[in-house]
Every structure is written in C-alpha cells, then in structure tokens.
Length: 382
Image (cartoon, rainbow, N blue to C red; front, side, top):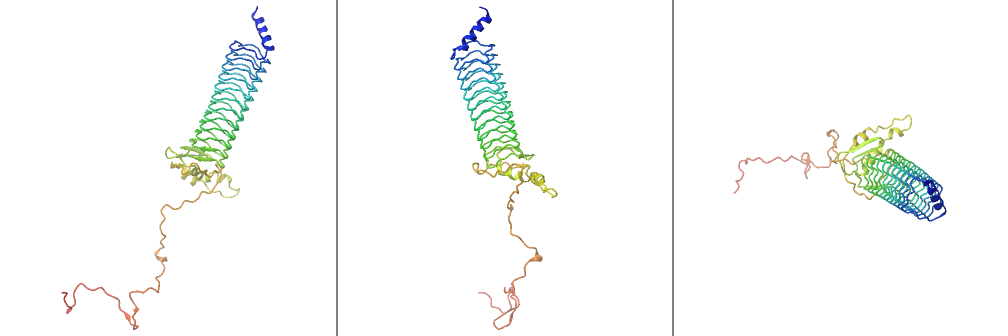
C-alpha cells in the first residue's frame, strides 16, 4: 500500500473513532484540520508541524507530546492535558485553552494572540518570546511561569496567580493586573506603562528599573518591594502600602532622585520630595507659579534610612501632584534674645542700692565694701 493510501486510511480511522489511542504515534506533518479528537490519547505523540487548525481536542491527553510549529489556530483544547508538552513556535491564535493543564510546558516563541487561557494551570510554563497580546489569562495559575521578552500588551491578568513569575524586560503596557498575586515576581526592566495594578499584591517583588508611567497602584501592597531605578512618573498610589523598600535611585515627576548610599529609604521622604514637582504645570494661567527648584535641589540626594513602621500605610498622593510639605521644627531651639535697644526698663518697684529711705525718712547711703586695712583704735582680734 502506498504511503498516501496509508495516510488516507489512517485519517479515516481516527476521524470516526473518538477516544482514539494514538500515544507515542508519529503524526508529524499530517493535515488533521477540523478533526474530531475529543478525549484522544496523544501522550508523547509527535505532532510537530501537524495541521490541527480548528480541531476538537477537548479533554485530550497530550502530556509530553511534541507540538513544535504545530498549527493549532482556533483549536478546541478546553481541559486538555498538555503538561510538559513542547509547543515551541506553535500557532495558537484564538485557541480555546480554558481550564487546560500546561504545567512545565514549553511555549517559547508561540503565538497565543487572542487565545483563551482563563483558569488554566500554567505553573512553571515557559512563555519566553511568546506573543500573548489580547490573551485572556483571567484567574489562570501562572505561579513560577517565565515571561521573558513576552508581548502582553492589553492582556487580561486580573486575579491571576503569578507568585515568583519572571516578567523581566517584558512589555506589560496597558495590562490588567487587578488583584493579581505577584509576590516575589521579577519585573526587572519591565514596561508597565498605564498598567492597572489596583489591589495587586507585590510583596517582595523586584521592580528595579521598571517603567510604571501612569500606572494605577491604588490599594496595592508593595511591602519589601525593590523599587531601585523605577520610573513612577504620574503613577497613582492612593492607599498603597509601602514598607522596607530598597531604593537607591528613583524617578518621580521627571526628576531622578538618588540616595547618598545604598539602603532603605522611607517612602514618606519620597512624598516630601515630589511635593512641589508639578506646581509650575498646575499653576493657573497668568499667575506666577512657585518654583520647585529649591524642593528639587534640596531633595536630589536623600540620606538612606529605615522606615520606622513598614506595616503602616504611608500617605500616598499621585506622584507629580503638588502638596505642601510640612515645615520641620528647628534643629536647635534656643530662647529668643531681644536687642539691647529693645530691652524693657527696670521695674520701678524693685529696691535699688541708692535713694532708699529708712524708717525715719532719711536716705540710706550706699553700702561700701570694708577695706582690708584696720581703722586706728579698733580692737585687735584675739
């Protein structure tokens, strides 16, 4: 039987048999588009470069299978088991992967544009270089997942489990991370411009050199987060919780601020530093705005210090807004001394050594000090 006849027969058989057992079979390069394969057993099967566009693989078992460069556009992979599967450079545009298991799977450089991974389990999944634009990751478990150099623009990551996830150098602009769990996540060099991080838990996260221009971190938790080199221009931190943050250099309102040495800076200091940064921009037209030069210059170098109460929420204005900083008390308080010309006159009621009348109305002469020499005729001391 010719090869093409064998393939035709094979396709006919698997098209009419649901729950087909194809474990370990070589299906590489076959055209299986729109194939009905729900519950199919494809463990360790070789499906590299296989065309599975529009195929129904709901609840299929694909653990440890090879799907490099496979075409899975618009495929139904709901509740499919893809644990440890290799999907490098696979095309998964608009694929349905809700509730699927992708733990330890490899999706390097895969295209997941518009795919649905809601409530999928993607623990330790490697998404390096993948395209996840407009991907639905709502309520997915991405604990320990790798997102290096991933495109996530506009993705929905609200409520997602992302503890220890690696987002280094990732484009997360306009991403929805509302109530996401991001403890100890790596955001080094990430772009979070206009990202929504309301109520997100960033405890212990590393945001070094990240860009959060215009980001919304209302009610976010940033205790123990590393904020060195982060750009927080126009970011909103209303009711956000800071404490024990490591900062050496930070950009707020377009001004770069450096501490005198490495260490921990109380975020209350930062709020004072940025208090007048945008006074000139927000001043009414025709008025003479107050110059923020003194506030900026005096605060450009900040002495590192440990926050007194890391757990207590610090006042959190939107960075770049104008707020009048409180005037600190003078360092050395000393009593005020009036000049000699303004000294009050002596009290007339107080007795003086001259012109004091005695009981007979006679003025008493002033007392003189007794001379060291004895007067003549005075008795000698015994």
